[in-house]
Length: 284
Image (cartoon, rainbow, N blue to C red; front, top):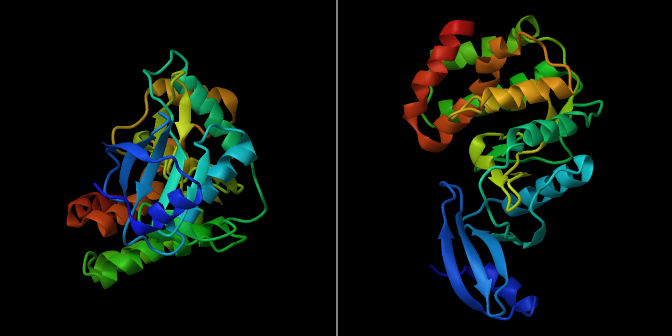
């Protein structure tokens, strides 16, 4: 494992005392991650990516800070970032506390209490390695149809991962959203909330990581928690105790998650096509 030039230059500018250890950390396919230990024993969590797209790590740093400042939820403190890297505090991990899922639900409810008049965000960012368009929009149905479903469908069609008929069904579904989804105010979202993006701190509590922040329908955050193993019932019970939750929200989960499944289709290939088509067969 070697440090990329951009990261080496930043460490030198910070009068870094020298690395004595690089320990790889599993991080999926988006970036290379590791724990860097300096000669004084201090640890840092570092991610680097040689071919990172523009503002990739800047967007991550901005999203983490925005969640922390807006809702006072726990996120890693970012120490620095550049075109090829991001350096954060290293948060030691421990087993989940007895209140972990309750605390996570309460933190998510705090995020969702942060609202604004328009959907979107102050800039575009990324969901995984895919650009996420966040142009401000007054209409939540138009926002989700154009900047979530259609954008991903355009990418998949262009790369040959999506058949034209299914592309048309996605466009048609976007035009029917106002008949399928109740009106919701824009809420601050984590944006990519699956179990792998919640770190357990040394105290056993939740820490939000790897966000794809924007203002959108809060049910989309809850829907994402149903993917890739899901969260336990206690989490949803605790969330419902904090804030009003429509009793039929789970009926809409597949529609919201179509965005993430299309994103995974674009990122990881045709194995996700079956899940995409199952949703289209049901709703479009």
